[in-house]
Amino acid sequence: MKKLCIGIICLLVLCLSGCSRGAEDPNIQERIVLGFSQLGSESEWRIAASNDIRRAAEEADIQLIFDNAQQQQFNQIRAIRSFILKGVDVIAFSPIVEDGWDNILEEARVAGIPVIVVDRKIETAQEDLYAAFIGADFHGEGVRAGEWMVERFARAEGPIRIAEISGTPYSSPTIGRYEGLREVLRDYPQFEIVISHSGDFMRSKGRESMEFILQGTPDIDILFSHNDDMALGAIEIMKERGIRPGIDIAVVSVDAQASGLVALRQGQINCLIECSPYAGDLLMELISNIVNGRPFVTYTYTETRVFTDRDDFYALPVQYRLEDIIVAARIEPHYTMRMR
Ligand code: GZL
Image (cartoon, rainbow, N blue to C red):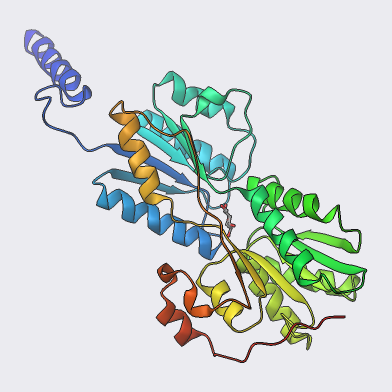
């Protein structure tokens, strides 16, 4: 019995000494442990974002526990709870939708684990439930899409009929892009948004949405897609129906990932609003500052640029590996926009 008591006391001492970070030698910087909940792998953008998180964590020597929620909020909540139980140093996540996070974030707060919201935003009355946000200005992306339409169709007579393929319902990019577009167009009554259909940010559902749109809504002048994947799915349907994307129907999309840039070069997309997935380095720097008690920026917005079919293709950002895109893109003569 005595030996058992001594064994338990030794085990307890070992555990306690192991729990406090670097208690033995303050000069030994133990690796920061980050628990990251990714919402899924629905698009080219999401794959690029996940790859960038992995790359940046490795380069920053931060131990990454990565979970893919397969587009299910309850999987994200379950992953965050597992990170809390594991006692990670920081939790970061891309919330699939805006609402429903208060309880799990309260659990993280009680556990003393800082949380960083990445990419998409959350809606909460308690702003202290998370330490910082890194992501894009989705409303501004919708505004830029509307501004391009107004500029490109300045000489066209109305009605100019717009179809919209929107992203995941109740997600902040869908809400922002939807509202931003309408904020611009409300001052231009010649533009009519005649139909809006959700494609959930997925190429396959972009096809389905475009089929639905063409069945019930003839004479579309502009397609506004909340991301490239859905735009490319819609373009497939247009071509199957003998419609020339970028000519018969102008196409505006958000993300500006490699496949979207190829379609831009081919004249099948006329305007791309950039939404950068490359937040990995920003996130790791933020994590290091938070864990080490240094000052940090609470809201960081990634930049948004606009690329159009009239740009100099070789001026596009180099990180999209121009040589790959040029090889992938059959360099076709630019179409002139059909102006009515
Ligand atoms: C935007 C991001 C969106 C992309 C889509 O920050 O959340 O989700 O625009 C992705 O491609 O699926």
